[in-house]
Length: 473
Image (cartoon, rainbow, N blue to C red; front, side, top):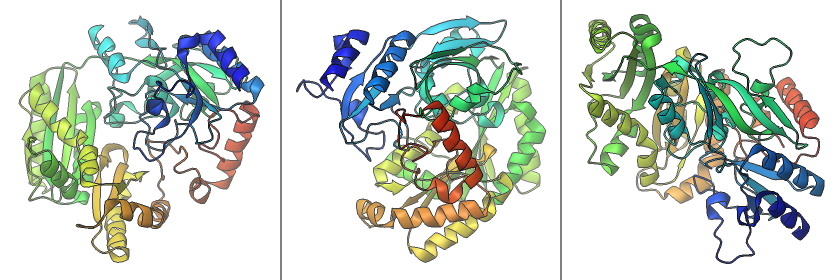
């Protein structure tokens, strides 16, 4: 291994290869997963500065038979971007590769390196007069390479789609250390298999994404946010249908939040004023992005809410009067995971269900969990507009969260995932599979699909050196 370390330092420079040999070096930022569920031990953390260095590092590791764990901002939630505890894996950190290579206004595209932080990408686009719509809670630290590797979703999927839909081209280093340059900003290219879509969502198991060409959009003339209380999940789904009809493509966000989820924000962050939550089972957060004017957008919202009130779909509602109020409402939604963490360890589920079936799924699964584990508390919130729920399970009041997680996680996962399958959903909507769900996938994925996935992995990475044990065993 010492020979490999020497080779890696000759490629990227001595300072860019971090090992445990130096007692002053703390590798926890690269070895500890975001949720602090697992702490691995790396052979080395290697930080290349450009694509040619990535290719050379991969070649060197392949020659030595050493596996590689590609890593961006390390904000993933399924333990997919940290090394195991063997001390034999190389963490390939791409955070130094953070340049915006080009903005093509006429083509409405931006080409960026994989280590570019999502928020920087958003701000750079806005300064140039454009919108990059991918938005999620970790945008201040996650990177676009990781977003693409996991096909991240976020709050605006209902209008703009996942990271996959926002990507027009990729630059990828293969498992053999070759570079595929597919960064063209073409929206039409029917010259064979779509390699871009193969690497997006592959979680670093098929190749290392080093750069991407992403779609840009014109900045909206106005963006308004409304917070509505609804009497049931059925009403929330009805409100979504009304919003589609009244707002059309202007509907860019539609989030649902259960009362208990909001109660945790009110409890742990009392400085935030959570509206309407105490007397209603669910609240909905809607965003309307208008290409005409604020008056037009506000008029659309008013007509939507009038119709919703008349049909008993909405019980109460407020519309943000300014950008500051809108940010405050969105901050409440984004604070739910943080409030959960304050309440204690919990069992998280990132699931998708056909929107029309979500009310029945929640009613049946809520009742099932309450029967099986009396007193269990359900933190239900997420992107109702695209059918993605964060259906999380908290220990009963007064119970020990760590004990609950240790003793009940397997059982709860089995109950919830079986229900997801029964309602024709997916056990991973936007967080990926990683190592956390890799052993669950065969129980819920079509066997033909799994066989095809294994064939692709074998063809592209026959040595199994890229993120082994993630997505597929």
